Length: 150
Image (cartoon, rainbow, N blue to C red; front, top):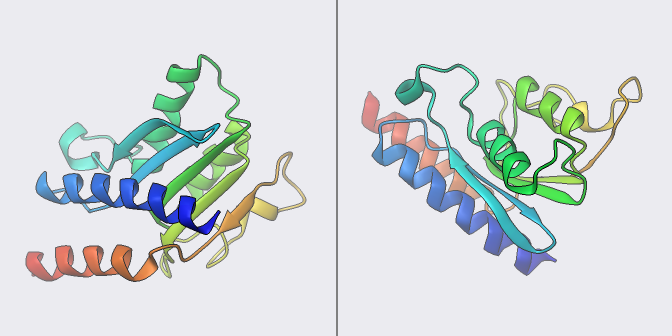
């Protein structure tokens, strides 16, 4: 499973690099169902002038369209940065099975750092979380991007 997690996170990192090339914060995501990638996306908030255009949010929307269902049961979301409250909330509402993320987000992480939406007993769905997969590579991509902006 570790090898699969790293392989799919590499695809998310490819998406993050695409975001950086477009001048977007380099965060990428893929959604995997049945061992197959069903959706890929990267941040497009600036390009689309859309506050919801986070990588994992967009990837989950694309996965729902590709699978023809709103429930993403059986799916794992791979994302290079720990999801925020909005994206973690969508994961609950979409009923994903699991989220795998790279770097933790000390300013907005909602899957264990500031909040843990994945395991809140007050919500109607819980899901597994695997943090820290290719975390150094994910974090360095973000650091390099912001360093070049200063």
